[in-house]
Amino acid sequence: MGGIVARRLVAFVPVLVLTSIIVFSLLHLAPGDPVDVIVGEDRPSAEVLAQIREDLGLDQPLPVQYWTWLSRAVQGDFGYSYRSRRPVMQVVAERLPLTVELSALSILFGLAIALPLGTIAALNRGKWPDAVATALAGLGTSMPAYWLGILLIFTFSLGLHLLPPSGYVRINEDLGQNLRYMILPVFTLGSAYSAAMIRFVRASLLEHIGMDYIRTARAKGLAEPVVVRRHLFRNALIPIVTILGVETGRLLGGAILTETIFALPGLGRLSVDSILSRDFPTMQAAVMFMTVAVLGSNLLVDIAYNYIDPRIRVR
Amino acid sequence: MTTEGRSRRGRGVRIADALRANTWSTAAGAVLLAILAIAAVVPLASTVSPETQDFRSLLQPPSLAHPVGTDDLGRDVFLRLAYGARISLLIGVAATAGATIAGAILGLAAGYLGGRTDVVVMRFTDVLLAFPTLLLAVAIVGTLGPSLANATLAISLVIVPRFSRLVRAEAMRIRAEEFITAAVAVGLPSRRIILRHILPNLTSVVVVQFSLSVAASMLSEAGLSFLGLGVPPPTPSWGTMLRSGYPFLDRAPWIAFGAGLALTTTVVTFSMLSDLVRDLLDPRLRHR
Image (cartoon, rainbow over all chains, first blue to last red; front, top):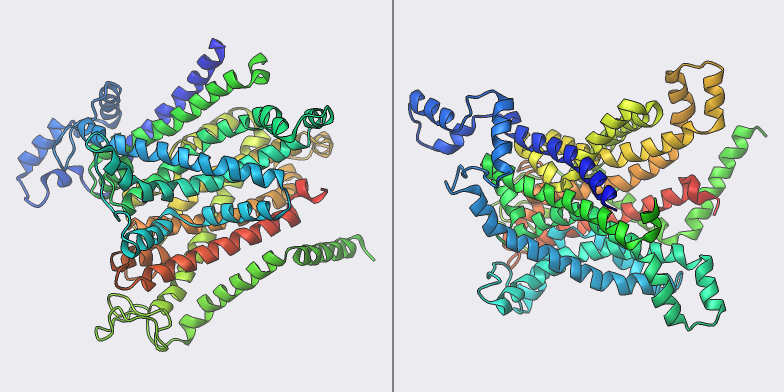
């Protein structure tokens, strides 16, 4: 058991290192001098520019800069933001809770829709409930977050005046208000997530429905709900765990768009803003956090899988 | 009748059967053709440019003169939608084509040659997959600067793994077949085996993945444009129209709605057709 975890971790590290090199190099592939971003409009003398460059270590060879950055980053020090002049970690720490809350609620919302719909579709294969669920899933994957979000704002904020179109209240300030502001964003992000999930749940259940053990369970006279709950679900829902990991990347991509539409100050928006404004220390930290989230959730899923599925454990 | 002729007739019958069995796909095909026709004809037939501003008719609701109204600069929304279709389809197809070629080369090298090449290619793929795709595209365009070419390049790069993984798996499967062993045994060079024996057997899975990916690429383009990182204004694209129409949602919803509907309709019809393509071509489904 420990061996598997160790093996996964060993495969995880090189990918993480390569990713960090890419994130770091983006700074140097970009045209223009990062120092220009710091000094902004006023043009100081060449000596001052050289001094800034030296202070930030930008005059060092690239591998040295990378090593300095990495060794500080692993200790949680990503330097200072070029724009707000505050420690990057402080900025990230402010933004992180929103994105975590948005993603977690969207996953819950997506599963709450997808598990029943996918099951109904699979159990009624070829009949109208299947057609409806499949059509919903198709529509959900074709409706990008920015378009669904606009429709929701138009209907529920501008039309019915039920929910706020944008903005955010911190979860520790007022939970009720916080949730009120999160309804539309969660619906937006969760819909796309549930659309993908409906397909996986349906496909996985259908694959298992034809298997011998289900036929045996039915043949020995078990009631259909018992067959579904005790036999089918326990086996067919295992692959869904994998999908939770695989879909993290797409979920975070959707979070970027959702945070943009609803003007939510989250990590996704921070990463785009810092890329657009060439605030490199912030960009490196934000992109790195999102990448680690993707890699980490895949790693966790791999490990969790070993616990859930005894057939894999034997290997 | 020659074998060639018979298999061609067989394919014709299969397509006809599939179309008859898939009324929905046929309808989707008709809608997509209509969109293509609008994208092709409307810009040719129009005398004004989609960038022509008219400050006497700002934010006009839909009318006979302007079927989808005008935007905040008095430009005709319908005309801009038609031009936007060209951009969407162009980037969707071009980005996917680029990814197909790159992915096929990488996948073939990894799957057929194996060993160290395989390790290097798969690590590269793993790293690309580690980024949320949209974020990686944003980072690439943010670094290189927003333009049509850079958006295409970014979208192409982030979907390379879809193709390289698929082609690698298929190449490994085919390499284990006896006809490849035979080809190796008679001393054919690797290049010839790859081009003449493996590549033709990959075509159908690659075509299926291609058709699935075009719709995804169009969504990525619109997403980048919505974030302000796609085709720079004033060139019309559906994503930029959604972005610029968003602040006018309360006064002139037709700008964002026109673009949103055009995008969703195109993507839905495209996905329905790619399902049809999959049913027709995927060898794993054919015998069911």
